[in-house]
Length: 354
Image (cartoon, rainbow, N blue to C red; front, side, top):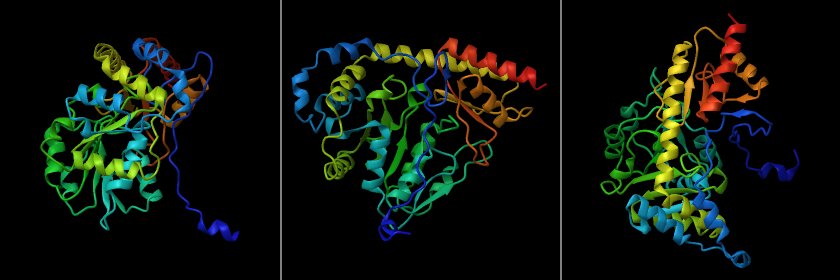
């Protein structure tokens, strides 16, 4: 090994879903929204003063922060914005998880959590989900340096009720509890209503799913003013200008269009429920997803083989080799036409493998 190589930080990186670009493909592998963003986004971007592109953007992203604060009825000082929820969560790990005690998160969860822990040298302990893939709240009562979990969880789509979430927060008021709500708009109550009650609770959400703007890279956190200020202090110590002008301007327009937001998420929910019914008819089983995807398996078929067959037909879903989930496919909810094509290819596979 060359001498300088000894000082390289080595981690196992997060592996994102495949991003193919083929004509007539059906892309159901990365939980993106299948519908375009609100037309108000185009209007907002068209009205931008491009001469200002030579200047740094507003480091406080004021118009975006105000739009989010207005939508969720919180103070602007309670809102933190970042380049997608991944950027927000990276700031969370760096800001709050600095104890000698390990942070806690589920063993089946968003696979970026252990990556950030390794990158930042944070001790962590995973807690097993039960046989139905549900969190066990009592596992989070022990001493810890912080807690984070998605709700609904990924990749299972399982939603835990608000009293379950509150129980974890209430029993951990010595540490920061982070609820990652990337998929909350597709079902269930948000933990945001608990924020006024618990100063150690931080809720993180994203524009990438229900607001059809994964490409703009906008995420946000809402919590007590002290938590948000701490995150800003860390962010401004690294890069003050993370949010660019189009994201700030466009994001404010996107979050203000509540009618379009409700229309799109309700369309996805309806398609999800129809797809659940069709998969059940075909013998698939799955946890009751409250997200924009379904985590499905079938006792009579080799799921890895089915995944490969779908991919050969340019139908892309997500599959992992991890032992406890290798028999499952995570299927993003697309348009009705995309889900019809997906089911047709599944039927082809099942017919060929009777």
